[in-house]
Image (cartoon, rainbow, N blue to C red; front, side, top):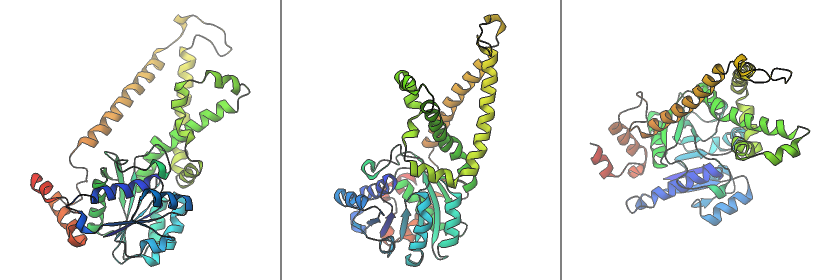
Length: 349
């Protein structure tokens, strides 16, 4: 079986390493799984070749997808449209195409517009990776991470199931979600935090006293603004393809900051002119409740995330049961290459 990866950065490179790691075992080696790739950057292709990230590197995406049963598009989101245009006529009939982009609605539209009807598209987004670049790629990058999946309406059931199995092979947890919900949720928990970090940095940097401010900037500011150090092009693409969801959350965030401002006015020991006022004239309780609510909310949020990761069934109720899924996956690929080892199946029967 051939799996083609278009884009060999952090995510694409990690996918390649995860698949090759899985294929190493004696039981799977005869299956003939082949991982091939392409990257638009010559430096990335050279690095991938040096590290043997993939079995073969091609000069064009069209060559890379020929004969591939699965194609993983791991390019920046604004390069997806061109990639789909390039590969559409060269995809195998019945091939599975998936992506890894951080925004999904626009990608789903491009897939519907550009990919042939005889392939199945399953949108994907692994919630993993703090850095960027092929040099940071690792086989365990997706271990225990939530992997969002958004199948196209015409995607075949067995193709969806095969993507679920690939996600499991990489060590991640498949989570089915609507494209609109996905883009709204990630705008809140990923994209808005990035813009908040960049705004905090620019707020300080554009201040007349920024040199003095930098002298007292500690680990708190460094931690809070870590996201601002990310790839500008990547984040620009994300903002452009999710601007409406971001604007909606920014409006809500501004309302939240207005509430905080009012609570500070009530709780503070200085009035609006900077004059002191007695503590007994202040109202700190609304601010205290707000801070305590945030602390408790953060704890519950990550406890819920951990609970999700520990659950045994990560596929929603609309999917077939596990035995049917395994059988379909086995039929999808010659020799059952993506089947779990029989001892795993026996242990769950």
